[in-house]
Image (cartoon, rainbow over all chains, first blue to last red; front, side, top):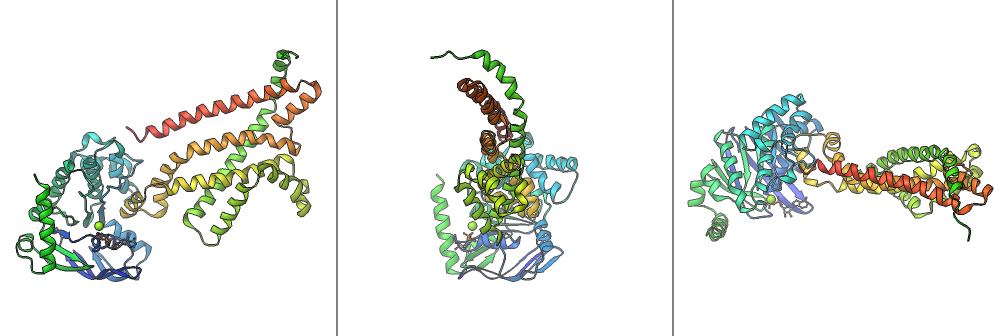
Length: 251
Length: 224
Ligand SMILES: Nc1ncnc2c1ncn2[C@@H]1O[C@H](COP(=O)(O)OP(=O)(O)O)[C@@H](O)[C@H]1O
Ligand SMILES: [Mg+2]
């Protein structure tokens, strides 16, 4: 289980996260939506200390930490029990698909290389890229790169996988294969916190949708409820815009 | 106009070749020392280590901003007057010192640029899976920076081999110094200097060929 309390982040004078409280149950799939510049990425990045929060408590699995009193070890421990999927994939350019997935197991978990590679092959099988084991990222399509990015996150066996707009950098033709893989993970009850504006995905897969604006959680609830009867006018306004845009995009 | 005395050139070549090892040793030692120093300077610059960063900038600025020949004279003729402990400094040592500092200043900047050029999102990805900064450097950043820096560093090595000829002005009998002596004895200046020129050219071409093969190998890994 994950618990976030009073998580706050400022960039200079602007308050980007305003005392966020959030609980995530094991196996829960949460989709975060909201206008851009609202702090969604910052929320995810504070959860693994890619950004250093200015206040707040975090509980992830066994770890409990006051974000203002963390040691280097605790940060490493926190990163080990969370995994991150980046919008732009961020694969290691000097490593093959297989090595990208095995890297953390070898370096961070100190597995022997053979064991790590065997596990990476299993994961490649699951993400449908067994034939691309020895391919370097530069030779893969966007969709394939993002699937490797997700594979790398799967290898970590994290308490939670944090997805920051995993499909928004993709050409439309590759979006489905990535969403398909995420659905597969959701079906296995991998805990996920996903920032995404794929409303179809949110509707089909999410247990809970969170609407954020101005560094706060404005409203949250099951997708069926939140999409059909949003309570806050800001949520209503946002959904209206997004759904209109997505309808326009569908021929 | 006299004809080219090819026979003399053929006789001269083996004599000059005896001085080639000294030239190559100075270049190799200079290169190893310069690389080590350049890496240290680059790390200071990349991490902006307080205190050292300013000193590093000054060092780089001075050694890139003044001629190598001036630097060599400064070490060999100038410093011993100030520090009496250095009166015994020999020409070879002074030359290696000068080459090291001069080329380290240039190489530090290429190494820094190569490190900084590695895509930042990969750094975040490595940190996100729980790597330490050291692991991130060793496993992700340096291998990619190396690939970018190697061609430039090879160019500096080639430059350095040619620059060892300046050691002759410090009284070192290396390839150039030996040629000068032979030419002064035979008065066949053109033959002597064209021979040594061809010799330098051959070495540089050999290295350029090695450089192309090395680059091809380094790039291959990213294209499968
Ligand atoms: N490293 C940073 N330095 C300064 N401002 C930042 C930084 N990262 C994000 N911001 C600002 O914080 C706000 C929230 O950003 P972000 O979390 O990326 O929003 P979202 O993901 O919801 O679009 C934005 O106004 C953005 O400009
Ligand atoms: Mg964002």
